[in-house]
Length: 308
Image (cartoon, rainbow, N blue to C red):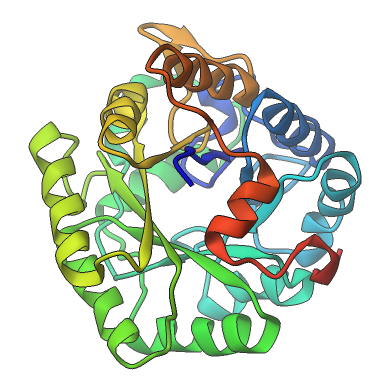
């Protein structure tokens, strides 16, 4: 299909409540913003959970189950649950919610890396919660662990065990080669979604040349077996997504990736970002995919086969 899939990453685990009053934190906020993003045109909703009391990222399946059923009841969008969680969580913690929910899709990070956002700590003098500043500052001395053994465990337990397919998150060129290792061993079968990520400190930079390099490398490694999507972190979100769309790629937006709608303008919702990228795509005469069209493109198991 020559239609573009819009994914929306609703809350993530990088930004903290101090950074934006519109970052969804409670289950109701996450549910409502996810549904609104789907109504605005997102075919895939990428979801993390947060402690309702203080907004801290949590792997607790009970919190996920406070918003997953409502999202499934109110929209037909594809639910994509994180297996990345946050850099402080163990692999077993990161897998608790997706193994319980058995979603159509889940994210899967394709390599260990310096996932750093500590420079953001300098932008705020006061914080809503005590956990926020230490959480942000610690990322100058932490590794986001995703070993080959970790990846294999997720593929086996969640992929083979639950029929879940993956958004393979690739933050650098080497991550594409890591994915190729699992494809060569038939642990990953086409069609598979590759999410190329630009602008995270510790990963590949948000330069147009790098977008072309990641696309060319994926083409060389996977040919026609993959579906390509792109996200740009922070202020690079809309520009990188627009470039990728022109190159035939799919796009991801959302408050996980950027808190802003434009220069100096905080987005008031995920739906605002979805509506903006959909408008840009429309101006480029590009059509967007419905959830069912995205399911067909990605060979998903269907919403009737999940655990929520």
